Amino acid sequence: MTELIASIAGPYLLVTGLGFLISGDFYRRMIAAQAVADPILINLSGAAHFIVGMVVLVNHVEASTVAEGLVTLVGAAAALKGASLILVPDYMMRSQQMGRKGIVVTGSAFLVAGAYLCYAGYL
Image 1 (cartoon, rainbow, N blue to C red):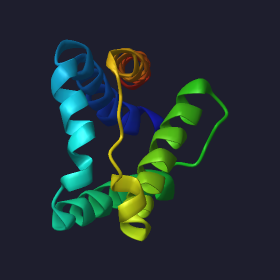
Image 2: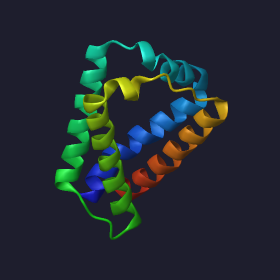
Image 3: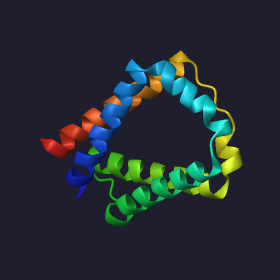
């Protein structure tokens, strides 16, 4: 199951990391715009995050290897973000400011995690 989830989450994180690094200004604007986002979209985003995270966790809660731990962590992070968006949306939507350095760090972390999961999932 680790390889299956890694082969799905890896490319997503890889592409998202590249997006942060290539289009950093867009992602800074997107993060800052959360404070005025449509409440229905926030709830739908919470539902999507929660469902994806729970699907991962129901099928995979292992941490014997780095890949297993990372897959479990990705599932837990998605479920936690989704639950937070549903339970405390006003708190979660307060305008988050992220400078260029934060975008680069976040994008780099996503890129490394995505590359590792692609390696674990496809090789």
